[in-house]
Length: 307
Image (tube, rainbow, N blue to C red):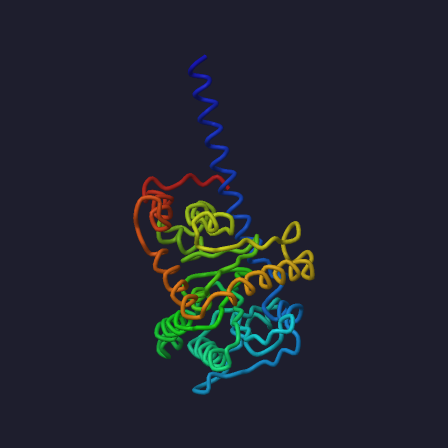
């Protein structure tokens, strides 16, 4: 009898493990759904009188990042976000949401505009990562991302980032050094894609579902780790099933968060923002870094392929 109970207990733990893995991987797939609302759709539904501003005033305009001025419920704001496409032609035009250096320099230009005129900033994060091409690297990709993050950290105006799809690597973080990071229920936010993680750990991208579980990229997991401040509800099955309803949830979250931030002294708000990100990098028992590292699987043995 004791052996049977132990066998059933082991099986229950296995099933729970598989359920978590399925949930994480399913969320990754929903976040990548081509019909999910993009930054332009949210701008159309949330921002009145939007006036797009293009170019980095140095080299070119990067269509992977869209930004400009508009009105959010009577408040003038600056909006910046990654832009993906749906059709293959649109995806190629927007480079699948992967920005080049000129895209991040355009974001910096808009940050300076917002700071000059004391306007709150909304960013929308939806990218698998910054563009990894040779031309981008030669054009100073790493420096452009680092300077964008530095400039965001120094802003005195309220900054709210919302992850609306994929939030991948430094390309996502470049627009997410914010006072508050919101995240839609079926979005993901991670230092690397599950496929990339699997390729590094197991040298096989087919183990992406196991990597997704270890990375903890979902909104509920990141809320528990204090990486984000709020999970924004989505319609059943994902925002693509009812974009208007999804936008209303985002509107409410932005409204409440902006009201909270406006009430804080600018100097205190900036200090809190910088302290927020310093805490994320601290490694100690029970810290964010410790929780993530402890969740990573061992390099050996390779996980069993059961999918």
